[in-house]
Amino acid sequence: MASLLLLFALFTVTLRLTSAQIGVCYGMEGTNLPSQREAIDLCKSNNIKRMRLYDPNPDALEALRNSGIELMLGVPNSDLQNIANNKDIANQWVQKNVLNFYPSVKIKYIAVGNEVNPVGGSSQFAKFVLPAIQNIYQAIRAKNFQDQIKVSTAIDMTMIGTSYPPSKGSFRSDVRSYLDPIIGYLVYANAPLFANIYSYFSYKDNPKDISLQYALFTSPNVVVRDGSRGYQNLFDALLDSLHAAIDNTGIGFVKVVVSESGWPSDGGFAATYDNARVYLDNLIRHVNGGTPMRSGPIETYIFGLFDENKKNPELEKHFGVFNPNNKQKKYPFGF
Image (cartoon, rainbow, N blue to C red; front, side):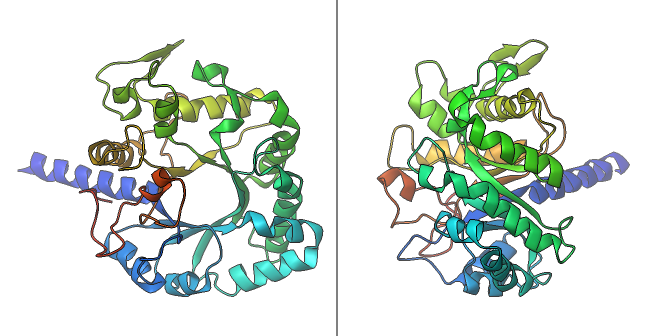
């Protein structure tokens, strides 16, 4: 009996630890979404303790008051130029969207820009990211909240030039002049880098060399051997290639928070209900355990809360974990 009670206690602790590492990304590009209040109540009733908002939606922020949900709050790319060029605008942004809600809204992070790439379709924003981060940081620091609210930006994995094997991970040479100063700031401010990591897209783009089992966390054996480290899933390999890329700059240690990860249930190659269900279930279980290169929990935000029918292409409409029409779980997951 004592052994059973001990096992139950350990299982309960494990569930709590896992739920503490997982959040959801709340996007609002849909015509059939429930109200922000309903969405926040849905998260509370499902024990979701962390959330990412892509912009400071006032109704969502009001609904988050006293919810206990920790928040990653986004500065949209469209706001970067004004915030970068004018400290007063940065101060006003922080007052309006952070200080007017904190601490009743548990704002933990501010993500200044999302997937800005100096050589991609968002290159027009690149020169504004670091000064916008610095101006937001200084506004936070002026109120002595810099230890409670960390300011960073979210990148995608197209920044990585070499990812195999993971220990040889490195950033593309044509993004180093953009990323290196940001990494230097993150070291100075003791802030993490946010990264959107999708095993799905890596698998979709290279199914010849990447197995579905490896992408879905279901491989029974080590697939990639990297020195003394063995990789049974693609998520760990991608994340560790980013860890290595940061380390290989020689600038300093920076933690990574996985600001998006998910699998679509429709709309493209291998985008099926079963694949999405398996990926989501295994991701939630996995993030408490660390990667071969980094021990400890992996703070991870699932994309996304609802299917968003205004997004394009079709694939992007099917990442939700709840049905927006009836607010029921799409999959039998648990937090």
